[in-house]
Image (tube, rainbow, N blue to C red; front, side, top):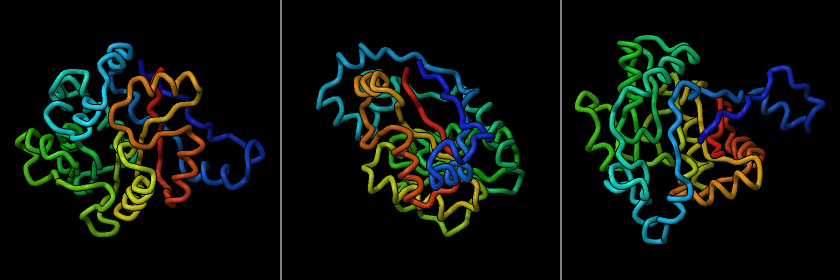
Length: 245
């Protein structure tokens, strides 16, 4: 199951690691903003048994099979159940969001978190972007006009147009050069507040488990390499890892 990994303590001394890394991590906090999300059970052995080049290729189309087909292809049925509402509340509190402010979810899928942002804070202007035409066509009706079809590597929004930008378990689906571009885009359209969560692993055992499970991730690595990528992209927001254990 997925377990939150411990956040870096605010009390870590710069003498505990190389100065540039320590300074960067102090500027970019590691924080678990999905702690209130129910943890789903993952049958890694079944996924590995079902996996094939054909299954992977179909999953990477991010269509009906990925969202609403069998678990072998992805979600195994992605339906609104309100589970993102506590997460929305936590993010609103963390970022100090208020009615009239704007928040963007990059990789919003069917827009359930976008919906819950607006339920948690009436008047908050929430928007989403996703590469999946299928997901957007099967989003809640009340999100009409709020969800955009597009890629994270080229966000169709002006500079500094959102009070907060989030991207949850999405950017690892890009190749590394495009991950850098996407992180730069998140930095560009945000007003200094952002949060990125991506797949990672801290041990060889975790990496092996992840490789047995993964279908769509094109770039994944250990945390220190993700930190290097964030630094390369000039990212200044918050972050956390999704680790399969």
